[in-house]
Image 1 (cartoon, rainbow, N blue to C red):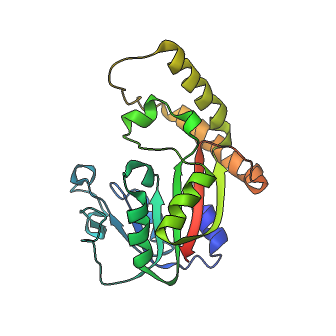
Image 2: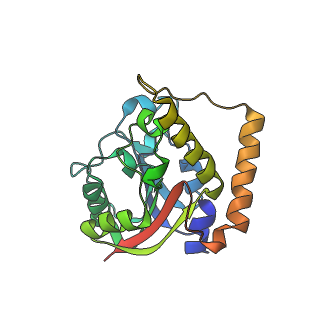
Image 3: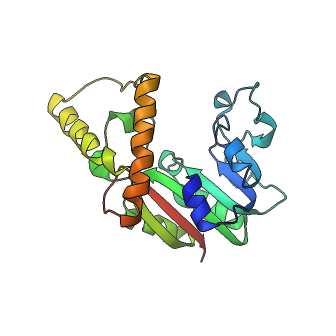
Length: 217
C-alpha cells in the first residue's frame, strides 16, 4: 500500500489523511509519515483503550453524522467496502469530504468465484471485479483513475478452497482460521512483496484483491 501511495505522490506529502474502518489504528503510524492522519472506526470493541493511536480515531459510524471540520487530501478504504450493505453511500460521503484535488484509495476482495467461508466469517456482502466496482464508483460520483488486481499468487489457492468447500457441502457457522506461525507469515509476506515488485507492473487480469484509485468526477 505504501508503495502504491508513493507512486501516486512521490513527494510522500499527502496533507490530511483519513483511514476509514481503521480498527485499532495499526496502519496509522505508517500513514502519519505521509501527512496528518485520523481514523474512523464504528466498532468500539476493535479499538484498544491502550492503543497509542486511540486519540486519532473517531469511534463512530462512517455516515452523514460524521462531519469533521477539515477536508481530506486522501481517504482510504482498506478492505472495508465489502462489509457494507450500502457502499455507494460510503463512497459518496467520502467524496463529499475530499479536498478539491483529493484522492480515494480502495482495496476490496476480488472475484465472486473466490467466495469461501472466509468471506462469510468476516461478514462480507460481496467480492468485486473491476466492472462491478466501476458501477459502484459511478453511482457514487467517483471518477476512476486506475484499478488493478493484486495478490495474484492467492488466486489459485482460493479457487481450490472454493471448489473443496462446494464438494464438502459444509454446514454450520464458518469459523475464523487461526494465525499461522511467525515464520509462515514472514514467508508469505516476502512472497507478496516479491510478487508486487515483479508482477505488479504487468497488471495481470486476476488476483484475490482489487485496488482502486479515484477522485471526484
